[in-house]
Image 1 (cartoon, rainbow, N blue to C red):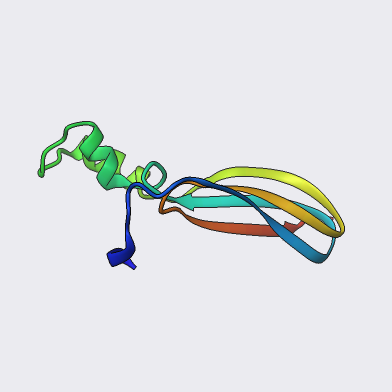
Image 2 (image 1 turned 60 degrees about the horizontal axis):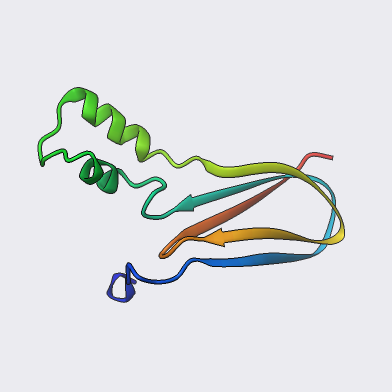
Length: 100
């Protein structure tokens, strides 16, 4: 919750351990944090004021569209790991799509 927000939280490296997963998969990692999918911080870093022109609005709308920060193919044989990097106050979504 926002009352627990702390900009000084450390980054964390961890792994998601999978059990019972077999086959070829596309792994996608989606992240929302201070630097990814954050139109507010983009406008602030560019020094834009409170009113935006049409080009700035277009840029901010694109920044607000979430996109994977990492995607790759992986082969799992019953178990596996997905390495994760959490920046401070990050929200991650890990998507597994079976492709074979």
